[in-house]
Each structure stands twice: as C-alpha cells, then as structure tokens.
Image 1 (cartoon, helix red, strand yellow):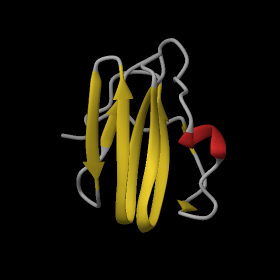
Image 2: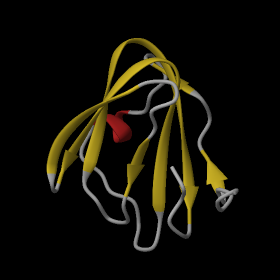
Image 3: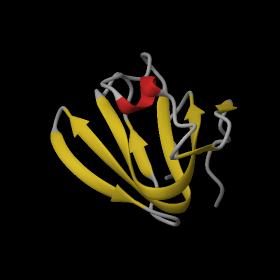
Image 4: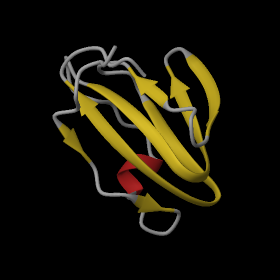
Length: 91
C-alpha cells in the first residue's frame, strides 16, 4: 500500500551544504508534514516540543508534524533530503 506523494522535496544536502536554517530552531507550516530522509551517514534530529533527540540514518526517517519545532545536526559525513507532504505521510 503506497502512501501520499510529497508535493516538494529539498535538494540533497551534505554536512557542508546543510543550510543554517535547518541547523537552528524552525518549524514546518500549518498542515505541512516533513520527512527527513538520511541517504548516507547519520543525522541527529532534535525535537523541542515534545523534547527528544533521535538519530536518523538510511531506512530510519524522521517525521516532523505541522508546526513542530525542531533542528538537525550532522553526525559526521552524511547526505539527507526533506520531503514535504500536505497530509500525514506513511513514514
């Protein structure tokens, strides 16, 4: 069973090209879910509400709820991309 398709995706970022905006506290807009997909390496996802630190790696994406404050931190060499959905993604 396939879930919804993303309506937009970021470019692929690595530890050097990851924008400062994603490394600092930010949120998605109302009615927008984000799925952080790590393609290589590891990335720490820090959720601020509720507080949690999650290690993301290939096959273990991070799902961001609409307007949920968070930021990411590269853990060494990595590549990642964010997919955006206008309805809850399957993961």
